[in-house]
Length: 377
Image 1: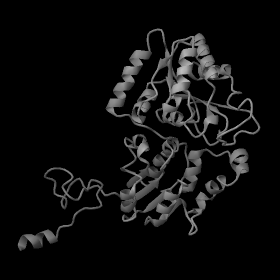
Image 2: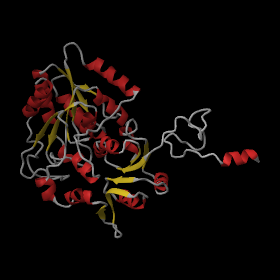
Image 3: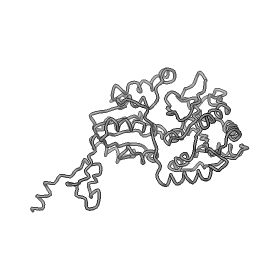
Image 4: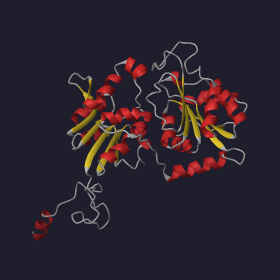
């Protein structure tokens, strides 16, 4: 009985970031008297489910949150396919995937700060149910409509409702916009990816293969745009022209990058090119794709996930922009943006019958010159 009374006086440090509950955080470690007690501090929940590029660029918010809340515990809810973009992030304490168990968990816990930067209904509904006194971003009206949760989110709310504001007037980058949503001062913070040991080993292997004594730089040509915005793609013939110019003008190894949607396109480029191209494959996992980009010195791409991965890894980038907003993209001084001069761009249209398309108006010579300037000066 005495033992029971003694135990009843002990207090478990359940607010410690190492607390597990069902067992000690380390063997033979007594929770009640732990010398390594590390309280969570401010508990923050970020909801950003998709798409991968948007998830990754939203990570620019993390350094600012840590500056504002040095002792804090950050949980991030995302879709399963995006977890490789977040799991190694040094600012995130817990990554949860979007499913019924996570929703039940998050609506039971108490947070100090909720940040929902997604406008899809599951995220909006969850944001309304999460317990948190400070709420930033977007939620849901009783009729199911999108609503800003705080005054700082009003600009981003109207950015989605006004083509004039989004396409013509806005000069704010996405990182600046999300900092304003959260009431934080933006000081140029970037988003980052950290490679694990297996990825680092693959980077070294690829660089040994591609960076020979006669090849000074490794350039990745990311030829696709994902399945949603086909209008962001540059024509296969342009990639073939660009490869020839780069091979002629610079000491480079050229690698083709892409996913399952680029099988036919990359085969066309490989067979049409008169210069050697290294095919990295189109069936790589996201974790493998990150490592492949990690081996590049420069990535030439449209506004895609590959662009965001390259930026997060500190790579040089040449970004080709037509139907999507150039003003919202911050490349942090890591390269150049080449923007179509069509009056109708940006438009965010998924299909277009204009001939030529705004992306097709971007010349290979322009891209080659920009690449040479970024890598050589």
